[in-house]
Image (cartoon, rainbow, N blue to C red):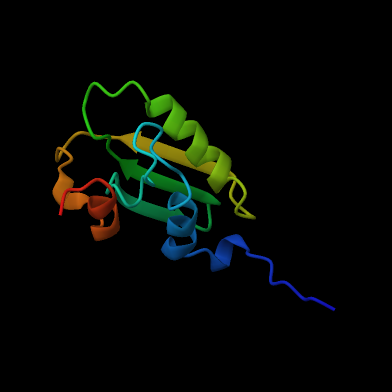
Length: 111
């Protein structure tokens, strides 16, 4: 018999959210939005059953925000207990390659 632990809103951590964000690729680069450093903050509110994410894009003129946002919502809503997902977009501070993980830099030949 396999017993699986169900994730509830009270047990959701930033790492739970990060694990989901690591599965969401930037549509152009094929690298996760987490590894690209597009996520600035994650705020989990168990009482409200909500998650608020502050993020940016690699450029202000990037037309792919709605695609990325949709993928984020599709992934995050699978976390049991989540009822509200707010994704805020900012360009302050501007994104730079310094925010990328070492793995992402290596994949793009930026090392």
